[in-house]
Length: 259
Image (cartoon, rainbow, N blue to C red; front, side):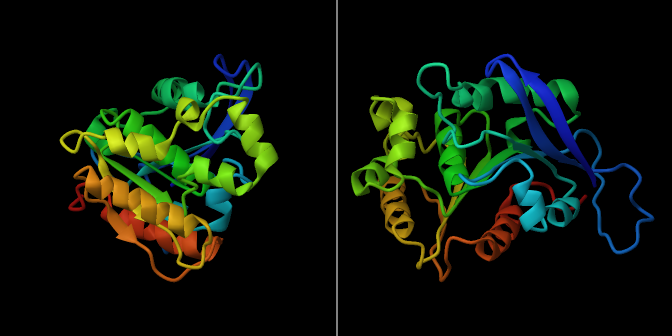
């Protein structure tokens, strides 16, 4: 697998930004100790979103996602969004939701040969990135076949009510309601089971208060007629849990495994 750190200018953000990308290599058959899959045509692609204290390199540095993706012949795109909560921030701070949901796929398509088909396109993330992944997939179900949240901060309103990271949430909301910024619970209430992507929700039972928020999300999804895969086993808010989790996520992606 090739790893590229791509620095580029974003018209939406009006600044230079970056993404880390993993791409299948066409000539990896002789590399010792690897089990890389080479697929005909453009590879399927996973948009993998980082958490609040991370950047676009953290998944690569803290997990074995490079090796796991090689076993599937999967491209992985990891964008940089700082501490934006994947939202369009108030004023001139940055339109990160527009960057993610509109500009980034166009940039990826222009730079790399990856599949553009819905059935080959997936999104996942941890913590803040779990929120971002579900927000994106439920807002644009026509884009994704599968979406996963690991320890997702899926209930911004509950975090705000608890006073969790109050300064950060006040900055993100900028006087707006959570519904205006992107409420995953409301998106779940409005989801169409006929068109929604396959969903995966996991959170460690020791990850307080997020475990309660994720249980509430699953209840809302099920009430709407969706049937996410749910993993609420032992675990905390840490990289050992997410490394195991991303491997499970990749094992469930709806891709052809006969390649």
